[in-house]
Length: 272
Image (cartoon, rainbow, N blue to C red; front, side, top):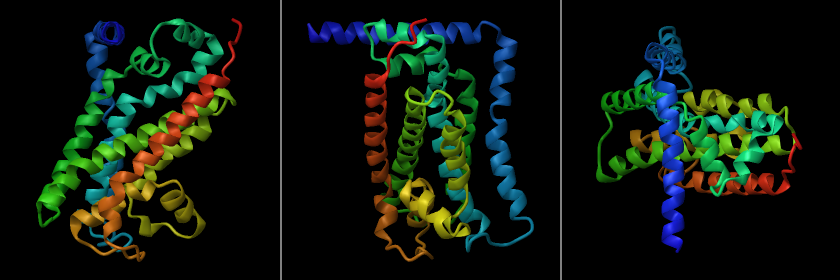
């Protein structure tokens, strides 16, 4: 019985995904333009770093090749999370319009439905470009490869995807209490992407303490990059922190799941 229910749910999710693929690919020229245009944000992020290094040999104590490892980890993780989970930020619109009521009435979990209802297939190009940046950065950074570093190079971007995905879900959950919370959420999602693009050493004071360690953004790209490059942390944390960094998103996923469940329980229909 349970297997039958699980199969029916999987079939429902697959039907939603197929419907999205058909609707988004119906106008092929528009879809292709969207594919190309969506690489723009990541291209600009990378170009900004390259322009910055044209006027200085190091930033925050790191060379261009070392910084590009952080850029690659950040870009790959954020682009993938934005593709898979980013559209959850539309939940505030669904609450306002009453569409969330219809979602909750279906015999499927609300979050997977919301993610598949508007899965932005056009963002695949951004995800592929982010992965390409990471591979090029890892290949040109003179990393002394070991089995451990190969494993870390695979786990770190996956952990980054989980971390950014958690930020998307947690910030979207605020809409259950505060419908106009969009700009606050963007500060942590897109602001977090920008923060992780550069070495943590360029930030200082309370800002670094809050974003790097309090919210955990330093463990997305900076500390895994230190472990891959074999560099000591200029800020004084021990080397094992870089190897343990992929475990930090586990805490973020737990916090985001708790926030989402609390929001669903708190939600009362708009009555529309």
